[in-house]
Image 1 (cartoon, one colour):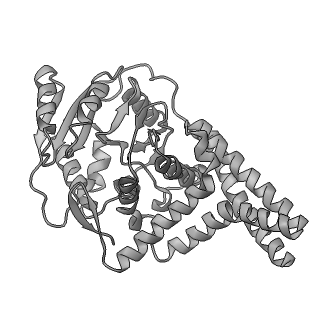
Image 2 (cartoon, rainbow, N blue to C red; image 1 turned 90 degrees about the horizontal axis):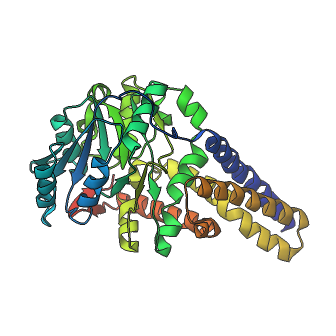
Image 3 (cartoon, rainbow, N blue to C red; image 1 turned 120 degrees about the horizontal axis):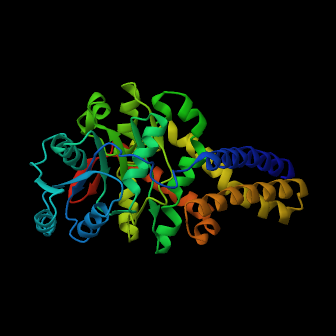
Length: 378
């Protein structure tokens, strides 16, 4: 038993050490300009797909219209809302000429709802840069100018970032911070920036700025019309078309509360899981990486301590401390709640449960429901 514990402790050290090293390396270069650059950046079309967003759209538009140092227009696509979303946008448009409302066409067969709305928004846009923005995201006053400056300084065709995630319920605190745990823990940013491969592309569909020419060269949202995960697919396609993409720290630029109840959390993460981790080949590997590096060490430490396996206990405790230190630095950087760090192994376990549920559901032909529409999970 002691030999087995020693082996498991060493495995945990290797896997946990990988996460800690990559996270610390990424945190050192994960940033955003402190202020907007001097000069006038290229005009930006802020494009907001909205379906039953009456509770969000007013605050979203107020934040966009308060942008400083940027020439913008705002186009909202009302995607068949039944809650008065279009009326609210129309009131803004009547007061401010920068706001336009378009009514989305009926959803064609084979299209995802959001991708269809974004496709129509891109066709309606008049400016050379397109900022795709979810209706629940609240921009800081200089966000558009700072993102544009980041693109200019690095010669990018697309840049995106994860807004500061507002979490209030226990389910939110446990699950939502795992998005950045995975991103910063397992995507080495130096390699992603140096190598043009699609495999290093990543992004966040909540907040994504792209050159209109690069967007069209990549086929736009039409190129992945039947997919759910725009945050992965658009950056990959831009890279495939020869463009350059990157991710910045959007914590000071925007904030969002993604979900406010457990049912929406589960549905929200499940709907596009099979386009990311939840694939037959990938998910077993992810399970070894995550369970082995984040859950195994504290479990081994407890068991080894009781069994008198001093070496295994010390190695497992060292690994646990190393992982939690990296996790705490990440939480500090992106302003996550301390409770998310304390419950980190639980969050990893829940993440794996969601991914496995999505994979098994897809194999059984299950469908994901989102915004009143059903989609195949494949």
